[in-house]
Image (cartoon, rainbow, N blue to C red; front, side, top):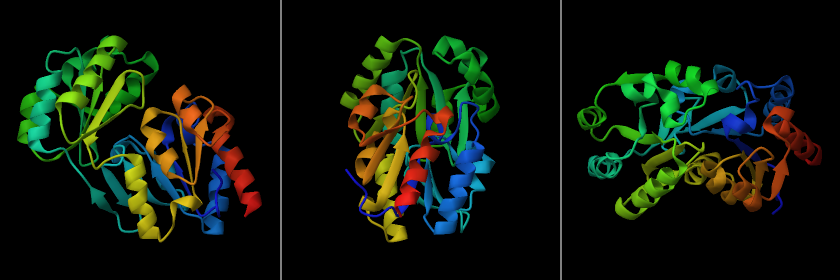
Length: 279
């Protein structure tokens, strides 16, 4: 596909906009400043909860809307409030717990932009497939809970989404299939090989971007979207130009309109610089 007119840009963060050190490179910051000057809005579309969105990203002048939790919340920076929110229904949570209870998973629970996790998972992340390089991020952003079932029941109706971390890929695939087959009204995706991410069926980055574009008065054929993982597929398909990162998942690259250089080679900035020249 081709953009009718470059009017908006949306980005995943990890593995896409952020470099290998989870930071914005100088080149990326420079092109973001150019977008702001040109009046082209930027939308952050992340699987992260809001509390873990980097401050340097929120400080970008071009950013107005921030999609978090794979589309469960949309934050408007100009008002300081969410403009969209969908949470998992209590009965849905009970059904998810019933399916997952016999699997060796680490639970990540997201509520109102905050992240919680079961203590056994935080005490031994590697047993649940977490790589050493992610330990600090996990332990510094997740608050421990002792009993997941009791915790989510006391917060019934408040849970935005769940992350299920599992080391065994065969078990992960089996659990994914069971969740889709046995639990109604959910959206299932993944941003990392070890994760299954579960939210309400109204979630998804593509669905959230549709809400944002309506608020901006823009059409999807003027949107360019960048991503690297399964949870980015919906927004790449929704956008007028869907761009997968070279470091991204193979099936995402097959579905994309263009491939950008790797995230640690300023891939997003390179594509945006090209598009800005065409404006």
